[in-house]
Amino acid sequence: MRRFIAIAKTTALEILAEPLSLLVLTASLALAVFAPAFHYHQFGEPARMARDAGLSALFVGGMLFAIVGAARSVRREFESGTAAVALSHPVSRVQFLVAKACGAYAAFALFALAIGSVMAVIVNGAVIGAAIARKTGDIPRLWCVSYACGVASIVLPYIVGAVLNRFFHFRFSLSAFVATLVIALASLCYRPDASLLRLLPAIALLFMPAAFFAMASTAAAAHLKINATSAVCAVLAACFLPFAGNYCLSAALSGGGSIPWAYVAVAAVAALPATIAAAIVGTAFTPSQL
Image (tube, rainbow, N blue to C red):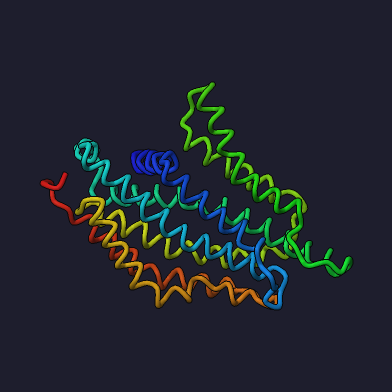
């Protein structure tokens, strides 16, 4: 178990330290923050645009983050020979591949925490902005404090990462990623609203496809080069699109609606067979592939 945790932890840190991971996080945050700022109508509900943009950013960005992060991490292990070294110790193939996938999934969880926190801040800002507009008669806008927190979560981490890298020789990408998470969580603590708890089931649902794609990307990378792995995952993503509506349920939250946790549990059970199948395929590599 100790080796399993060590492999998973190392994988998560490797993914968080990837410059591409930081770029995906920044792009997803930009969609969640800036998309609601340029709306001209509220779709019948003040926070709908903010909520839909945030969940879309988490869904698309999360899939890309899980796929690319897992594939690059696993492929690096095989090409550098560290996979063979790890398997020469008492670490089974199943344990190694599943630990790599769990590490990628842990990194995705931090990614989702950052996006979800900023989304909640922007949704709250949209509600407050609409309330202010009703009193003043102005055009509904995002509350300036929430919007400033969202922009800060995009800009400030790069400054923090640059300072830590320049003066303390910390990894820039990892420092900026952690700074993004800290700023996002700190922003969420300012003027929280209990109604934001409705977002939790919708966010939890998006963990299911991420788990499958993290495992599928890990499995493909154990057999294929990075470009071929990306192509396989792109095909899997295209096949998944008809079922995406079962996991990205932003419409269910419209008009004060909610998603029952029982549905989240059923969705998790439905995603489990495909995830297990991907794990079985991934652990079927031969010693010649190491």
